[in-house]
Image (cartoon, rainbow, N blue to C red; front, side, top):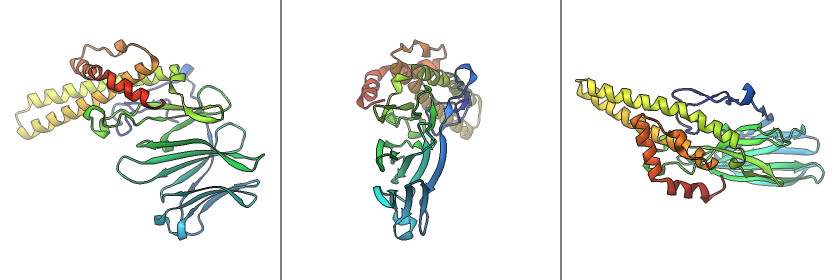
Length: 302
């Protein structure tokens, strides 16, 4: 689990500088979901898991992985669900409701730069002998492969803590400097739905986990700027100036992520105010685009 030691920028997936600490209340970490098995696309007869009357199978088309394949669920030998899938599809069998019986978590990557991840979670119904979809989510740039499946609220069903990719390249930010804020799926009325706002305590932890990183990145901007100013070597100066600009973009992404958490909480963004001129400049940049940010937050469930 990565609850105790998260990356410096809690939702910027491609950066890992300046480690930050994100502690759960009382120093305790949420109970993780138990993974019972995992299937991958394989050459030949494929990969499968069986228990009781159910069999879950992932098979390459014609036995050749590069041709893709099919994911299938059988009950007493009869197919009850199937889906054509890409070569990189992974199926995880995870006990999401602590009943000792797994749910099926399927992730399909369709290829492309910074996309495209499709996810389906199914419940195996032992009484009816079928399979029921609990979540069908197009994560686009985000994959559940690195999500946290854990019991945040102590309920029967686990929550899924992943990231949200709607702010990728926002405001001209490069993809690698864009914020990917945390997103929580919760079990509601028989299905998993986006419910991040229902977890204000965790939103505050996510926000507070970004704040030390903001200060650290601002320090990087200053150090690179000073190095560029102090050197007499033109090549070194250009390199330091480039690194300072990259750090400024990273700082904008981190401040934007923290601002998003404030917006989801309904809080003022005064918690982000700093005397550091680099942080102030990044926050001003975010505030100038606040209406567009709010529209993106409201566009689809968060």
